[in-house]
Amino acid sequence: MPMTPLDIEHATFERAPFGYQPRAVRALLERLAAEHETVLHELRRLRDEVAACQEEVATLREAEAELQRAVIAAERIGTEMKDNARRAAQLIEAQARAEADALRRKASAEVAEAHAELARLERSQSLVREQLRGQLTAFLRALDPQTRGAVRDRLGDGAWAIGDEDLPDP
Image (cartoon, rainbow, N blue to C red; front, side, top):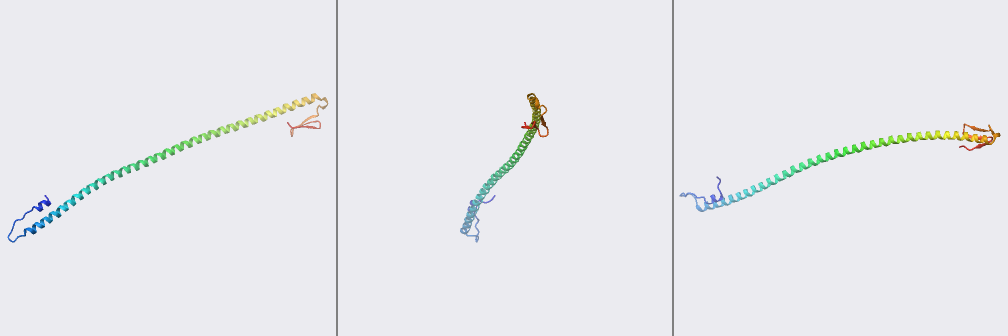
């Protein structure tokens, strides 16, 4: 068991005839006891400081581990958000393409329908012209028996003529 400063301070020596001077030994022992006590206090202080540092290191390591977990979680969340945004963008793009295709089909159908209507109207116009031409010819013949045969139709340019007078185009 190590000696304490008190053990050193209370140490005694046997006397010998030419052995030692008690005052000098006592002074040395007191000085040793004081130095030993100072070293022990310093050792206790350093041990307390080491313990506090170890606690702080443990706390910092826990905080570091927590931060690492948070960073990993943030990276995972960021990756998931990017993936979700990418999937949402792909879905929006697919919907936009489908809508564009539907609009193209509708527009094509409307154009085809307009062409069909135009063709029908052109046929109807031609039929109405022919009927009107026939009726006008019949009216003119009925009105003036002398002009029979004078009404002519120049089919090349669609102009009408009665005798020498031109009728306006329909």
